[in-house]
Image (spheres, helix red, strand yellow):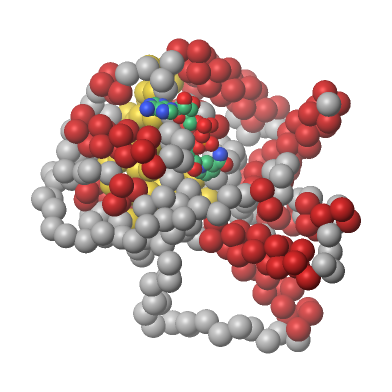
Length: 327
Ligand SMILES: NC(=O)c1ccc[n+]([C@@H]2O[C@H](COP(=O)([O-])OP(=O)(O)OC[C@H]3O[C@@H](n4cnc5c(N)ncnc54)[C@H](O)[C@@H]3O)[C@@H](O)[C@H]2O)c1
């Protein structure tokens, strides 16, 4: 058992190294953790969203968002939260990192230190940078002590009720100029949370490990202001991310939607009996190596299509107005 776990840890570390190098060389790095995750595609959950809501809402004074973000908060110091805090701090931003108890925060700081050491090992940062990055991260257990931060990323568990409570509290606590981003993987936080100022709520969906994968999906709700979207995108670009902005909310966003379709295709294949879980097929249950780290799904799919089907491309809307994604 221990041997298997150690092997898994080694594989993850090796993949991180490839991803760091690929990202630093300007390649797209997508789906790193997901395609390399131990469970593979079939273990990814299929997250469902809800219909977007409408209605009128007061417009908040978001003038503060026009100034460069100097301080930020990350709520939830788990797998995503600690990695997001690292990215923000690495970019010189002071980060309040909030979780429910001190031991979880201690674990988060230990994880951040270890991630920084890995980044230094592969030359992405210098060892001398580490103390400064750690110093800018301020652990705390109370949302009320977040203070006057410019930007918040919520990364609490993907449980509707927890999201609702935390987001609603953040809306009540934070100054109107603070943008509130949710790292939900697919929940319709826009209809969950009871926001007085829904124009400042946006989804900023990062990918694990957030300090390596450049992609962040930015998804507005029906009442999110353009200013909130633009300032979130500007912040993400400033800290070295490659945000992709959707024009509106669709459940599972982009990557998870595609990944879910892949999982469904895998299930369909299993259903035919042509492959079985017992086959331990490499393509079914194992990562597809460095290819997954440097190419997006569309690129890979179109290439495959070109080679295997003589280049017959499925119909898609080219140019003009793109219809909203069906949910
Ligand atoms: N893990 C992934 O690969 C991944 C990728 C992209 C997005 N996400 C999304 O990011 C979010 C967080 O996922 P995760 O994997 O980091 O979860 P996690 O369970 O590792 O971390 C969540 C943290 O939130 C803390 N928390 C719970 N209630 C809280 C509260 N009221 N106030 C402050 N902190 C609280 C928990 O103690 C925990 O440390 C989820 O919405 C998830 O869907 C996860």
